[in-house]
Structures are given as C-alpha cells and as structure tokens.
Figure 1 (spheres, one colour):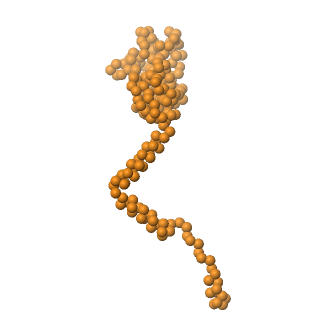
Figure 2 (tube, helix red, strand yellow):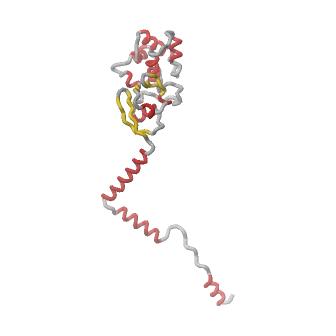
Length: 219
C-alpha cells in the first residue's frame, strides 16, 4: 500500500464509541456529593435522619389496624396486622405467654382461652375480631397466691407432666364445668376431647375436673 493510500484510510476511520460506565465527570460528581453530605451541618444531618426514621415508621404502620382488646379485665390499645391471630397477639403483643402455641391448627387445645365465657382456640380466630369482647387467659384465671380451684386440683391430682398443655386443659375445663355435660368420667373425656396431652395424664386430668365438679366449683 502506498503511503498516500494509508493516510487517506486513516482519515476516514470512524471515531471510537464512548465507553459506557463511570466517566471522569460522573466520578467527580459523586465525590463532590459525598463531600457535601459529609460536611453538612449537624442540624441538616439530623433532619435527614429524622426524615428517614419517619419514613421507616410510616412503612411499618402501613397495612396495620388499631384495635382495643380487653384481656383479663384490662384494656390494651394496639396497632396490629389485621391477619394476626388472637394467639399471636396475646403472646407477641401482650407478653401473655401462658397461652401456648402448639399445633397452630386448632387440633391440640394448648391455646384455649375464654371469650365472653366460652372456650375458644385462639389460634383459629383473628385478634381484630374481638374488640369489645371479654377475653380471659390462664393469667387471669388464677395466680400462684390465689389458685383457681381447677389449678389447685390439677396440682393435687398430678394432672400435668411436661406442663405444655396444662394451661389449655385448665382453661377448657373451667368452661366445661359450666356446660351441660353428664356426670360420668366418659362425659368429661368427651367434653375434653379437643385438648391433647402428649404425656398421657388423662386419668389424672379427669380426676381433677371431677373433683371440682363434685364440689360445685365454677370458673
């Protein structure tokens, strides 16, 4: 190739395409922005942090609902997720952990509480459904220095072993003694069929309940 041809070809070569990505100008712009943020006054920085905090709080509250629950005679004003079960609300929001979370499917009875005097599996009902209701948990039934007759009877008859089901058993029994069941042990067994004891303390549980029923004990 002649020199003059090579010179002509070089003149008509297309200009290289600009590289994509971080350019010198964008790099300097970012460095400058970082410097401004670092040297901002504490007032501006505090305002920015507060704004971030408000945004996070608003995000956390989005999708929740305000409710008032009356539990063991005390009203509690709560902000909860609408689909929260009464069981989770009692344990996580009110720290009433005497109500146990067993199967979470309404099959074991460990989560039994009273709603307006009736026994209910708290894992199967939404907390938001019970505004205005009277809710009683095992903590509201009796205390160590003033046991409910059923609590005392369970201790006397050794109606518990591991103890996990005990609060649900007692809450169910406390409602059962007000219900129109027969007088026989088999009637008690049928009435308490929704409460499972994995340790197998059923005979002692029935004996404790029958003692309270015979004494005319009431919840």
